[in-house]
Length: 148
Image 1 (tube, rainbow, N blue to C red):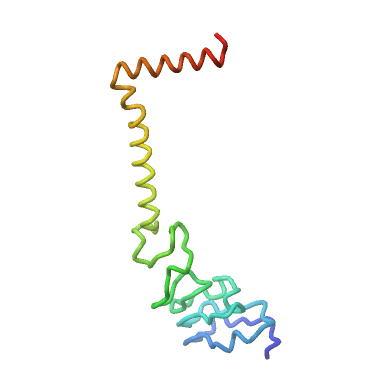
Image 2: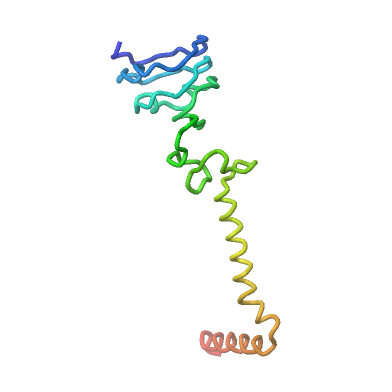
C-alpha cells in the first residue's frame, strides 16, 4: 500500500483524526479528504502538508497547515499571515482581518507625513521673512539651472 499514488475519500462520512500512517504513503500524488467529518491536526509530514487546502475542505474540525486555521496551542508567531507584520495570535487582528501591526504602521506613516509636511512648509507659510528667503533661494537655483 505504500506505493499508492491516488487516494480519494471525499464525501464518505469519515470522522475522527487523519492517521499519522497516511504520511508513510510516499508515492501519493493526489489526495482528497474533503467533505467528511474529520477533526484534529493534519499530520505534520511534508507528504500530507504538500497538498493544497482544497484536499481538506469541508472538514470543520481539521486544523494546521496547509489550512489557514491554526490548532489550539500552536505558536502562531511561526506561521506567516497575510498582512500581519510578524504573525501573532488571532486576537491580534481587528474586525477587518487586518493585523494590529499593520494598523499601527499606517497610523505612524500618516502622522510622519503630516508632521514632516507641516514641519517644513508650516514655517515657510506662516513666517514672512522665511518665505521670502525660501523663494529667493528657489529663484537662484532656477537661474543657475536655466542660465537666465
